[in-house]
Length: 306
Ligand code: A3P
Image: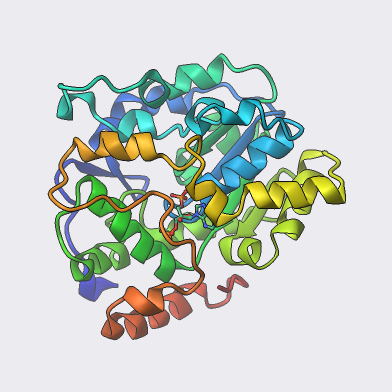
């Protein structure tokens, strides 16, 4: 890890030992002080771990499989808190960023119960009421094998700000310098909370293997009943191909916005390949060994496996 230590990139800050865009500071107080309720649902996970997939799953279960309203964009139904500081209007004065991207905190505040919110923020930066245990909204976390996360994040970052190659991105990832990194600090902090009754810790690989089981787990966790037929229909709706073609979740419009930030190279779709172990085809070979040792070292004694 130290071997690959690289400085924090310009435009980013280190806060609570995590890397975030500087713009986060403009929203920190509002996020810290956000009043939450035990009936709220927070969908969390490191970027590129399957949080969009999980959010669509959670929203539909929470809203009794309301497919009609699920036609509205996911950002509207289950806002990604972080977009308010991820996208900076000053970088794109020639386009108007939509309110569902810039105004996520207020939008969440004004939602009727049960409210839901997605965030990639580490636990230490969630609203204070959650951190101090004063309120216990439901927290559903998704973790994914970091090798697949890194590859996926590289492609996604190349759409946004990152101009380097995969090799350079791996160094940033291993040294915890990517947005929301370090990866293990993020995952393991939530992992430690997994046995609390208001926390559900899931793995991307398990959901891929048995989506029906994941749906059942989430339904039970949210106190919802779901029949076998409903489960089958939901699985179909949440399949990779269906999500990829669903404009309400595939972020195609946002890909277009993102494209205006920079973009010499062709855009990589947000819902890209959805594979377990896809890193084997893409991660430079000499990195696989380095990554695996790094994973082993960090997971030792934690009980978490991928
Ligand atoms: P890949 O780039 O490996 O394809 P997030 O939403 O947290 O940013 O995660 C994005 C990752 O989740 C992408 O991974 C994306 O393709 C994958 N994903 C999205 N919907 C999916 C689905 N229905 N099934 C499997 N993977 C999905």
